[in-house]
Image (cartoon, rainbow, N blue to C red; front, top):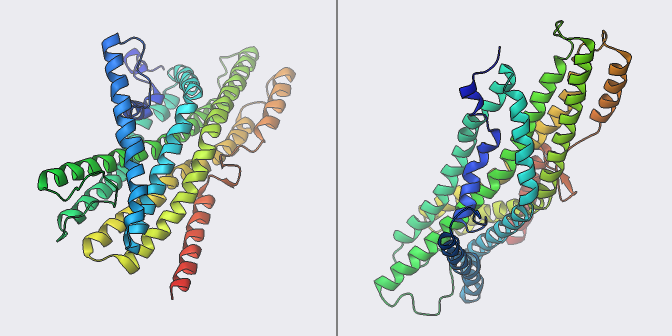
Length: 391
């Protein structure tokens, strides 16, 4: 039984990150397609220049300069947390952009795997379910990141005095009149929203591609476990099917190498920033928040921090488990009744499958649920030390 042609055309599992690719255009990162007209290309280049000058350069720069005029501990900590987050956001964008060619290769590998899965209903079902999973995985990120932007703005609106969302430097008196103040507030909120949703895209892109890689490995394991079960196929056919599976495994490892190269420095920075920002949020909530809205903002912000790394840690562990399942799948196939050449190739494949593949953060720590717990423990230890010093 095969899947209908209509359904076959819809299986593009790498499309689970198509909205991320679209958002990179909005963030002025991805180069415009050469297929578009000259006028459109030049217009987009102008947009890129304006976006990076006012959002990528001046916005964080104004916050850094604004620090020198701040005396409140709360505002200093709040501003530093935002600066660290924006700095890490820029680093993440750079590493993803610099490895874009390799990620396009990953897309090609994924498309090739999809083609093979179309003729197997069970494999097709695994990969086609990814689109639905993306919506579920993205929902908490969208909720929390929107919450950060909303609560930050509400904290200003319900303040008795005119103040900015974050202390920043402007070469004019932003308190001069309501129109100027309103324009500055719009600029700060647009900058905050741009940084927040850029972070959302960056924080979910690598985990979702890790999820995709894990599912392709799951599909391969399923296919291998069934080799030799179809008695209509000859031993020669089974051997050829094994060889194809070995080639597919090599492609999956190529996918893994590209993704690992992209994820390693990004996740190391995220582990460091997550710990420091969570600790800062706890300090602000407990000791420096002046009203309920500020506590709400710091709570939402602090909750969003561990979410930045949790999904990547979860699928890092899932990938390790799927690598172990591949070895079990090789044992599970009907190798007993096959030829000597088949068993020889199977032994080599089995030996290769025993290699330990895992994603690491800068080679320092493994991207896994255990790594996530280590970050949480380190954050609590840092908070306890700072709290003791404060007393």
